[in-house]
Image (cartoon, rainbow, N blue to C red):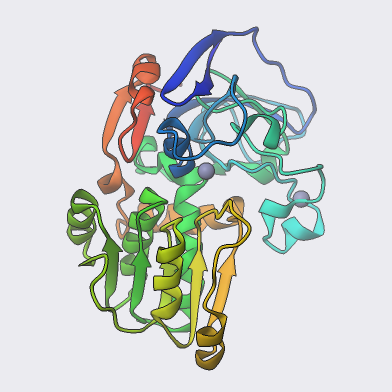
Length: 341
Ligand SMILES: [Zn+2]
Ligand SMILES: [Zn+2]
């Protein structure tokens, strides 16, 4: 079987490896049928981010076909098409039972697919085979009628966007939303689409990139060029991954509003306007998504026809063309191949 390795800026390589086998009664072997780049993968491939490692199995966002399950697996059978969250979670520990699946305590560290040493030895999903532990807890069936390519980002970026707006729109139905974009490119656009699907009366989108501003407007957002004056919004999203974008989002958060930041600030001295936030009572949330928890709601939004993530997809390429396409990836590249069953 083959898998792709991340070799550095603009470089991925196929590697031939022996077949995988089940290693426990509760495991599954799956074959990715639609995979995509996370916004962080694109930043790595373009050299904007350096995690300090190369030569590791790459890719952590996919929809897969189940090939084989252990005798204890109850929820899926071979032939099922499933969402595979990028974080490993057991479903049974207290964190998992509370929906905090990104902080599952059954394994050490931050177990994830496709991150090399940071995520442990789980392999990547740009591969012919992936071994999935805790299959009953991890895997979520993709509803009939939902095309795998449309939800290739269900493993990470879609639930990441969902958590920035969904709980806050439940608390304040219809509230206006501001998305400050620029860094986490697809998450920002998914946040626009999800907020509108969940009934936000107005979503504004700030960016400096004309193509993304056009795409955001096509999704239904009010496009705002970075630097324009902003009003105040009860719900704001910082997907800029840039200190000035973070500041923009925080200063545009209305009294008692909530701002969620999905960008990773690698420096340890990113300024935060705390005085201003204090006098307006701003709630600020940063942290990793709990991917598994958000997946069912996103899938049902797509199944209902209210959310169309494929509108954010830049290009779909055949699996065999993945290495060339990943050398200089567009905003959202989807790798696709037919299921076996
Ligand atoms: Zn990711
Ligand atoms: Zn757990």
